[in-house]
Image 1 (cartoon, protein in one colour):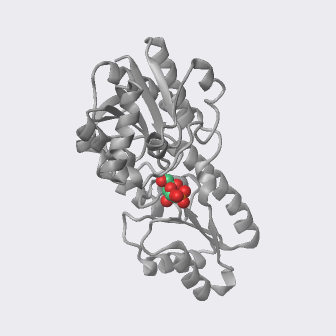
Image 2: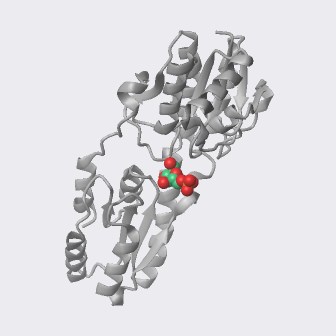
Image 3: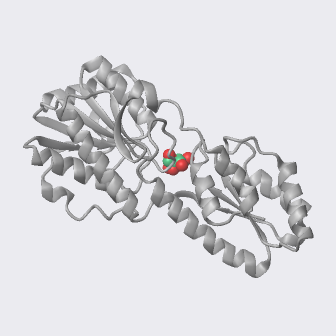
Length: 322
Ligand code: F6P
């Protein structure tokens, strides 16, 4: 394979730049041409391709966001949109494509391969960590650390006022950011979409805590939790007016910032292996991490369903927050 391209797609994630850097430099090391595609599939349809040199990825390993920019493309969901995308790859002589993104982006890559024979490798990049077949996705570690630092700060003010805080964290319909940031900050309760929220149980817990004179509460709620952080806040505010219940929605700050060492290293490994995979003729696969080893997982097998949440960790919250 002589010429490959790389794009970032869907929500950005800290560490995507480290992956882009690794892909560009690995390709150049093996004397391949490498093209960047701006704005994900949207940019591919609009022919936003440019040849990249080693200097184009200098000084980016430590930066959040993605230098290639990202977008969500409706047109790529259509046959006509994908035909335009494939045409631009072919007229530039590109044989292999690395897609850094989430499961939606991989579905697109899989169809592009089936319809137009382009070789594709996926690199999992999403703060949500909601892709099966890999224990790690780029950006998750940084996002959890960002949420953890924010919740630590909220706990300071919660303790000063003896308040109850409901903190909503990101994750789309997955609870990994909530579970991990909640455990890391000693949250009294963690609510995730993977377990049905029982408000009565939350109320019992607060009543029990009040009896024990525990008067600071942090409840971390994943944005995809069926009950919802806002509805829960309203109920608790009515029930416990003396606790001055507050809601804090952390939002997009969780997607930004300089990636942690872990995100930089894993993203570099995944980018490096994505290019090695293409060189070996692999296609229709995602680079994943299992038991700390790099693996290749068929899009069809691993990437479509979500990773199961660790129920034991959820159960542990009750024990550790006593
Ligand atoms: O997938 C990453 C993510 O940040 C989710 O956690 C969140 O639900 C979503 O993207 C937000 O998307 P947008 O930036 O389009 O509001």
